[in-house]
Length: 147
Image (cartoon, rainbow, N blue to C red; front, side):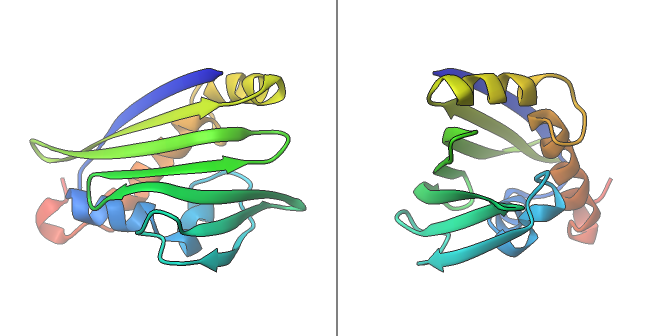
């Protein structure tokens, strides 16, 4: 199993950040390669909900494992290239929210893929996606929170 932890600050309140994070129809704005989300079953803000994330022809079935609005969102995801568990915690800080994202992958191919995605901050890397998300959340934050 490979494990990666990435953190960043978002100049927006946790409620706003959490709502954007769990907006499946917008996921492709910050997650590289996402072309669609389909087969949503249940409410994404409840454990047990399922959905399929499409990366072109590749599909990644996903299940929501834990939700504590607006503090925690955890999923199990996977296909033969990348599978495992992802969680994001949203903690209030002085002027917004601190996001801590954890990826735990299962299997050799997933370990190799996640190693590649964990390097650097290029678009499509774990850090690059988190930073892109932060910029979107800040841009759309309530006016009282904008820096």
